[in-house]
Figure (tube, rainbow, N blue to C red):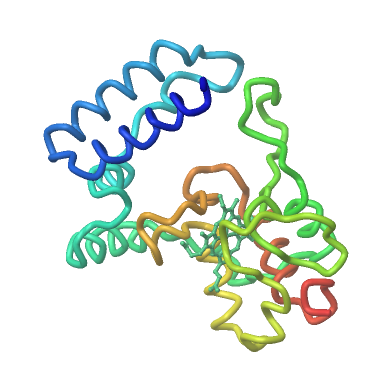
Length: 205
Ligand code: HEC
């Protein structure tokens, strides 16, 4: 019985959501934000500024991740304008180190110590190497990324830029802006590019 009542609630909420006007949505957003602000407590390196959305995030929220094409293009161009490539022109590091970074989910949480390098948690959203026992499917499979796309300098650059700031290619992407946000260093991103692009990497086996 209880279950039936819960489901009725879910269905009612879904129906209400379907008919929501922009004003309703803004009211829901304000309520959700107030709830998060009430229940989220700053601890360690996880401070309250995490709750502030930048212009891109606020715009994606406003349009439920589907902004009109002109807005989408403007957002992507803004992200691309802040893209930084390595000054030494080298885009590939060490794939073995890249594998460790891709498989590490550490970093950015309240019990991570400041100054300790973060992982990329790529496995959370992508299939990468054949020996992975489990992986998320939020993002596309990256199995044989270099082998299928070609081991070209252009593809290395694309991989680097994707990891540095994926939102330059898909503004409302769920993929974090690892370089732009300072989560991963230039050297770590180079290692990840090698993990995706080195013919010897397990990704390409
Ligand atoms: C929270 C989920 C998430 C995480 C974590 C994530 N990605 Fe992604 N990634 C995506 C999604 C979704 C896409 C598909 C395109 C888009 O929406 O940006 C994508 C696309 C990509 C692409 C382009 C694929 C193509 O077909 O052109 C590459 C390369 C990539 N990710 C690499 C990585 C690497 C390396 C990491 C770890 C440092 C990583 N991703 C972490 C979600 C994620």
